Image (cartoon, rainbow, N blue to C red; front, side):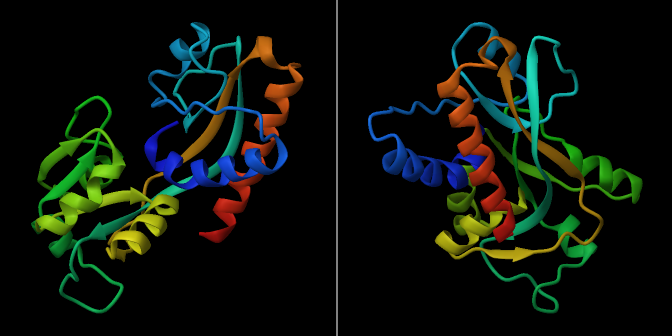
Length: 204
């Protein structure tokens, strides 16, 4: 799973397993929509939780978990009304971007182009867990999926803002290989993941 999902799901999943399957060991690996197919086909993992890939293979099963959107995180309060951020402040402040492939543009930039606006991505990192330390040490903004933003802002004392434009949305899914459809252990683990992700989303 991606680390923004891991931050939320990991503790809940471990808690369920300790209560209901105390002899089951759990290995969590880094993965995303671009690596899901390979990791499943090569039996590196049993389950991938990530943004929905643009292409779905017939040999894989995909279960929708929830639809996500972005919020803005900052290490300090931005000027303007509490809980609000203007587009001018948003575009004038350098950004940190999480990108597994190292690219400095994403869904947010597509939305900005539609408004005739741009932003400067000053820092690109591979993991969401790096962001709080960057935001607390420099004047930067970061766009973070809303579920993970809630946890990061609480733990690290970050300020959360709604985007000053309509947020791009994406679907978070669970993906597994069809050959494990009827494996009772994997089916049970998938059911636990689905339940816990629903509970996480309900808190947002």
